[in-house]
Image 1 (cartoon, one colour):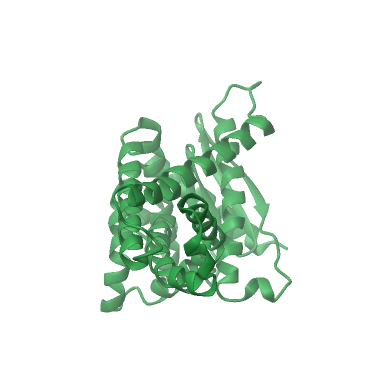
Image 2: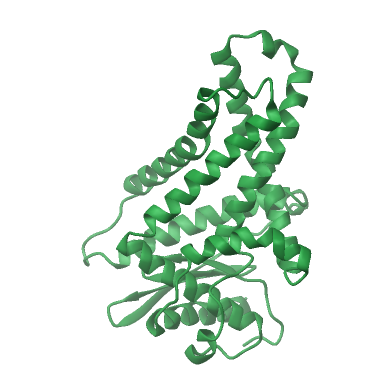
Length: 304
C-alpha cells in the first residue's frame, strides 16, 4: 500500500462496492464465482473557483451522483444475462424518476402538509420550517426503514458496511485482509447517510433565516395570491439547494476531522444512528469485494 494515505470515499452498488480517490475511482462487483471491476477518472478541476469552500461541496456532490449512477447501472448489468444490457433511455428514465420522486416526497409533500395543517411560511417562517423540516425527516426515516425490508436492499446495505469497514482499515494503516477489516465498525462519519441528515438540518436553518430576508426584499410577494406566492417560495427553495449542499459538505468534512471531540460527537450522532439501518455486517465474500475495489483504486492512484 502507499506510505502516504490518500483521501477516499465510496458507496455500495449492486453486489459490489465503488471506491473513489482524488483522481480515480474503481467499482468492483461479484459476478458468479469471480470479481470483476472497472475504473475511471475523476474530472480534474483546474478552476480555482470550483475549489472554493461551499462551491466545491456542490461540485463534488454532482460529480459523485454522476459517477455513482453510472457505477450502479454498470453493476446492475453485470447481474444480467450475457446478451442483456441496460439502455441509455432506461438509465435516463430511472434517473429522472428518482429525482422527481425525491422532490415530490421530500420537498413538495412536506411543504404542502405543513400549509395544510395551518402553518404558513410567510407569517411564521421559523415555526413553519421547523415543522416542515420535521415532516421531511420523518418521511426520510420511514423511506429508509421501508426499503431496508427489501431483500436486495439488505444485501446492498451489507456491501455498504463492507465499504466502511475497508475504508476504516485503510485509514488506520492496517493491512487490507478480511481478518483485519472485520474488526472495524460499519459506521463512518463521512458517509452519504450522514450527509443527507446534515442537509435536512441545514435546510431548516437556511430556510428559516432566508425566508424573512426574501420577504423583506420583495414585500410585494405578501400581496400576491396564496398559490403563486407559495409556488415562488418553493422554487426559491430549489434554487438554494446548491448552497445548502455546499454548506453541508463543509460541515461533513469539518465533523470528520474533529470526530473525536466531545461536542462534535453530539452533532454527528444522528448520522451515525441512521447508519445503524443503512449499513449491516457484511459476509467475508462481501468484504473481499470491498478490499478488491480498494486495492485496485490504490494501484490506479499510483499510476499516471
